[in-house]
Amino acid sequence: MRPSITVVVMLLASFCAPISAQTLAPGTPSKPSATQANDKKAHAFRGTVEKVDASAGILTVSGENVPGWMGAMTMNYRIDKPGSLALKAGDHISATVYDGDFSTLHDVRVVIVNAPATNDLPPVSYVCPTPGEEGVLEDKPGSCPQSGAPLLPIRITTVYSCLKFESFIQEKPGVCPVDKSELVPITAALYFVCKDDSKIHQLDPGTCGDGSPRKKSYERRPHGDHNPRHGGQFFMADDNWHHLEGTWVEPHTFRVYFYNDMTQPLAVTGFSAQVAQSDANGNDVAPFVSLKPVQGPVQAKDRNILELPVPATGLPAKLTLRVKFKPDDKERVFDFTFADYSREPGSATPAGSASAQATPSPQAGDSVTFTSGTFRPEAPLPTTTPELLKELAENAGSVKMLLDEGNLTALWYPAIRAKDISLALEQSHMGEVPEARRPEIMSAVRQLTMAAWQIDAAGDLGNKERLLPLYRDFSAAVAEVQSIYGSR
Image 1 (tube, helix red, strand yellow):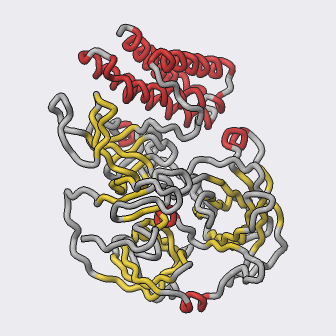
Image 2 (tube, rainbow, N blue to C red):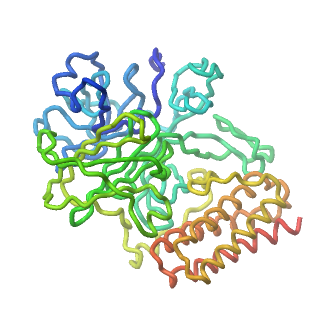
Image 3 (cartoon, rainbow, N blue to C red):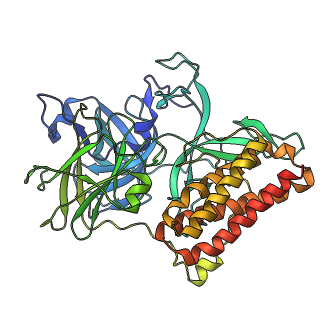
């Protein structure tokens, strides 16, 4: 039996608590001393080391639930005695943590644990469905602390997704079918569904109306993905909403990307940020200077970047960032240490190599999910089949028009929108299609989804030569969807 959670555990903290982040309050020091942790309540911590970054002095640890401190998580930590313990990926560790400090593990020890049971479903947890309370996590039924709404049961698990094409999710590590990059771990909700009945959304396996077994499906959770998008260091602000990723771009530019709780780009409207160099002890050694919005097509697309050249800064680069998310907001402080320049994540295998060409496309099955949620276009989708088909045609037309005009960086929106529409038709309106033609729809939607992702990526790179065959695949899939639904 799992231990009872006696306090409301913030799920968001459990998935992406900051490595080193503080809030400046009047009359308090900007950077608390190391001895302050000993004045706070201690908790026993256990977890598994996922990655060791010796140059930055950071461990990535998959931690177990710590009642009263935070829930099960994968995040980055520093240890209180660097160099005193040789750790490697796969080590099981115990440590001491303290209230209010989510960045440091104290008294770390390597421990031996029994192998976990296999083939077991994740345990049922309970979360709040109301906005603003997404972080509430309990291990038994109850009510949301603010709204009073009933807690909803959910199974939370770790799965793997493409870093920049979030709709693709599968059970095991692997390679992204779009850009051949390594899949990254995320936290998602596990459900069991029936392809031909969108009303089936169950916590347990079972049988569909046609006698076939229910299939696994995964849904992203708020605060379930804190993988850096640009090879930087990822933090969460203490307001439980804003997230940021700091990067050190060659030769000497500090660039910060901002996100919401779903790791979607968050426009920097009203934001202000300043940065200063700091020494090995975290003390500022230069005046703070304001960051500015990035200009050009990248910023025009997501509008979530601030940056500043910081000349005469060597490696390792130690920087202190101060951020306000509103003009009258309190100032939040984040510390960065860059042992080297940040590198954009690349392909796990070169795109032109034989092994890359041999990498199979994902096959339909229990372990792969194409989520219907849209991660950049935010306008709500229509609900009826005629309206969806009409909007599908409009977006397909926009893709062609933008391609003809050479406006490649704008292709992503109508392409991704068309993908979302096709997924909505498959998942919510499959019952309108003759049973004999349902495999055709599934194939066409998969082709459209893959082509839309690849159009998004190639458009960002301005690669029109690569876009032309992708557009042919995309338009053929759109025509197939229109033909099947139009012939009902």
